[in-house]
Image (tube, rainbow, N blue to C red; front, side, top):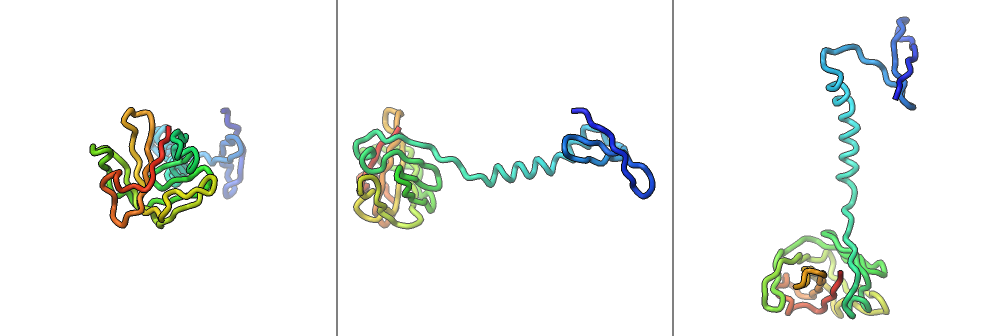
Length: 174
């Protein structure tokens, strides 16, 4: 973009300024550094602000389509990430912390995300159904054995679950 020059009055002497777009940028006297270094250093505050905005943005949740009969009739599609679950009707469960990364499923250890809930709840979901039938204290998710889906299991146990045998309900999504 071509820059136009505008004369200004700086204590009686004419100072040169570059006009770029809508911004009036004072021309800097030569400071001995290469021009690219001057540009990089003056654009650093802009880059820092942009980085802060990106880091402060919330993480985007993954959307999962309900495929099991229980998921389709109770939870509907969900959004799931490391902060919680949002159900199709807008109800949410918020996670407090991840407490385990493995769970025994059908007698076999699997990689899983096991989260403690920030508040034990059993929300009313689709068609007036409840998620568990008791206040949910933990939620776990893992990949299905064929790798094509994700299972969400909920627990109402006082201690972190070690096995899917302790779950009060499970739902499958793709």
